[in-house]
Length: 626
View 1: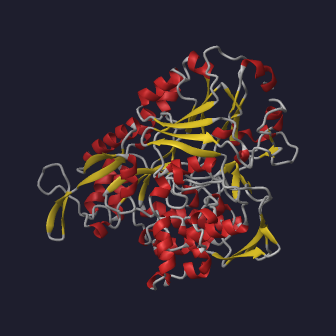
View 2 (view 1 turned 45 degrees about the vertical axis):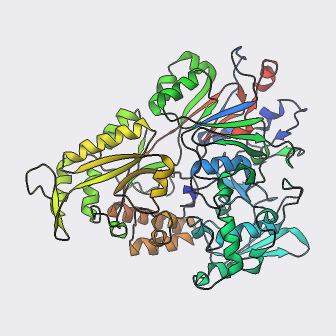
């Protein structure tokens, strides 16, 4: 699931809106990259463009700063070694990529390249040409060497980025054009469904900054992809990786480096992260700009607020400009407030992100009790989750039920034959009884002899702290499980500690979420057995030879009519194995202050584009309204 950690999006828009803001704007005009002459609002079902307000309100701030509310900061800002969505939210503005996703069409488009690559007839060679005039902050030009270094650094087996490595295993080599430093060809060993889209996940890095002595040039992709590479000593690359992997490159803001128009100028952990527009940048003199080129706000302040009451107060006091993570009930209540509606655009937006409860299916690896190794037990727990009731109680009934690994918003690949499980206490009791879990001593708790020892069905349920909704859901789940004689002890953990525990597999059951995408999915990252063994994102230890074989076929099948039936078959296999309790696809709750023009809300993540928000004023209201 490459989309679980990245699909940067590119917005195409009506040029009329921004071009009417005045030709003297030093940031240039924002253009419709689709260039097909159609009205961009014809695809409004994929995004919302909010019209500017009719008038400027006297209590609106005139500061050209966007305050963006989020609930959790990045795990780090290392250019290769990190896994959190907040990290990628920051990279939207500090980094650049070969390709992006067009928010409007939900199709790939170029970012640092002149156009999408030319593909060979056999689907194994992709020819790229970088845009000219792109420079790093030190004045050096972007070249194919930087692209090669970026992918070598990510492929290197000693680089600490295991969840990204499956995406690059088909990259055989990159050939530079000897006559043009901006041209190169990527040669793949296999056809792969994400041979192009995968590069939305990898910010391009400056070789001169990260590898000034060209250590990685001594190796090839074939070397790094050889499973025996680490069996031999490679002193030079070992020393380079020790330095490159150092945590300072993820936390020391003076060491962060990127091609984007913003830089991190302040980071107070668990409080705020400040992005400031660079004083000089290669995009500033462009006559036409893509989304990645835009940098209207002087600063973007990403502020962490978790308490729902504090979020509501921040919006009422206009201390927050943009949010995509307000509670469902909070937004539903605010939308009834005339003052809030005067100040903010707001909407519940469809998306591709979903929640799940994961079971530890290989507890022996960390000496935990094998509560969930039996599929009957996992299905019993699934039947004890009051999903419909919790949806109504906490989510205003707006959440869509998940049934397996594909969101219902991906209508092409969604297996509609699979039905959501509903609360069935008696059915759960029957399955637990069949799995050997019975109340043998009359204390209302199921027990079973495991390894010669009587064991009560009492386990730890980990959730991330900071969300009252998740906390309430966890307690409802605890109470529901007890109806069948299962004791669930809820443990709330700070976000970074929670996510750090998942790759170690040191838990019983946990509540988490994946950030999905509209794009064709590679299921290896989450569901292939190798992604448990190699430190990938198969945190639950799921393993099914049929699923593995199907995933391997799906990854290299580019014909939709052949691949999609396989995707639906995989969904059925996973549905039957129940490695997760699939919970909800909840609508994204988006608010944008009306003091900004270009107030777009998108289906695909991250839901908004902060750099394109342009401060309005009383003097420009008539020119920014349609």
